[in-house]
Image (cartoon, rainbow, N blue to C red):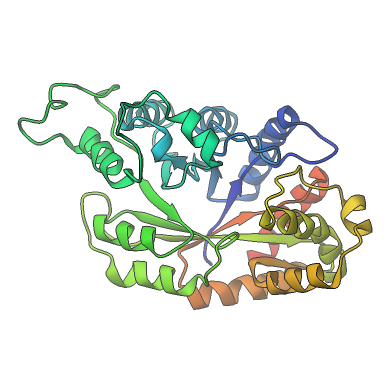
Length: 332
């Protein structure tokens, strides 16, 4: 059966705090480690009131230290916000401390709004900026594989020098990262949970175009999906009310904390809003164990995913833990 993993954005709920969201992340990681999930990835977002995850590399170390088996990684590090040398050294340190358990997922976006992105990069030299993702990615790979002779950075040694970078994945919500990941021979993760396009084309395109390199000899495509599981289909639909209202607000630019279930169930939807939610139902997979298993199995079949990565926006932490447990048992 296709492995299951977890993507955690450290959601902030209306009846909690950002600090508590980080502690909830640690608790969920320990829970799913015991359930046999394969990976636990942390996202990078800045200045958003609905997520508390600006520094995934810090959380990776905390989670890896508190778990035993699960791989821990970034889903992802937003490379435009960071000097490639800093990324290389931080993830080499993590790999040295937790060998064989760390993943490095990279994204192109800044993970925030334009003003905050400017604040993140304001110390750069005049004239720099724009979309320099490819330049930064190439430099990161040079820090791992060595710079060409004559390059000014060739005399610098990234530390710790005896540790390689962990496995590399490019992340995206379009086919750009799929094509690039296939070209350089690394893993690929598609964000179906918020992408505006179907997952089949990027996932299959990555697999068909994959070129073996020192980064990887075979494709590995991870599909990140939003999913909510409960004991019955009706209960799962009830729990999904918070995620549906949060998505509706996000699509109109309102980045508010995840609404409580009571708030979501009482929300007075207009006909237009209900139609908008109905159009987005294919991005949130909801059901009892067997219903959800069938939905996700069909998605794996259509996308040929090597791995499913589940993100569950449920404000009640007990229900969130139970959702992952029910899915794990149904998936087998």
